[in-house]
Length: 130
Figure 1 (tube, one colour):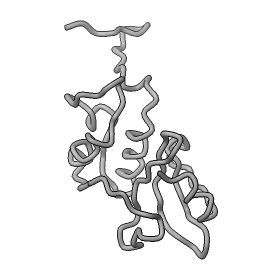
Figure 2 (cartoon, helix red, strand yellow; figure 1 turned 90 degrees about the vertical axis):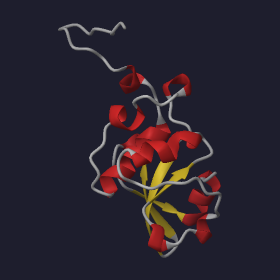
Figure 3 (cartoon, rainbow, N blue to C red; figure 1 turned 60 degrees about the vertical axis):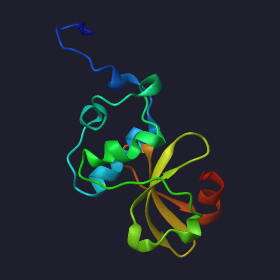
């Protein structure tokens, strides 16, 4: 077994350097549910194609943080507020956590914002939602 050493003698986890929007979204969801988790703890030993979490592996990864997950194909209007927050897969390959609705707007936490909140119009989110 070999390791990748960084200058200064620190080992570098290759999962830290890969863009993984689904894993980033799951980490945000863990934060929302006060679950302690890291990229390594959620993915260790999983068969990650191209070092990225796939929708098929999401439930296994979420279970490691004590969360239950399943992949559902559901229109935004059919997502119950009782289930919020939920992780949404977006058409551009990214993800976002839908935190709440207010009138015709959604409060989301985009995966690339590392927890930053953003209000978006329901229609714009529906267009981006896969």
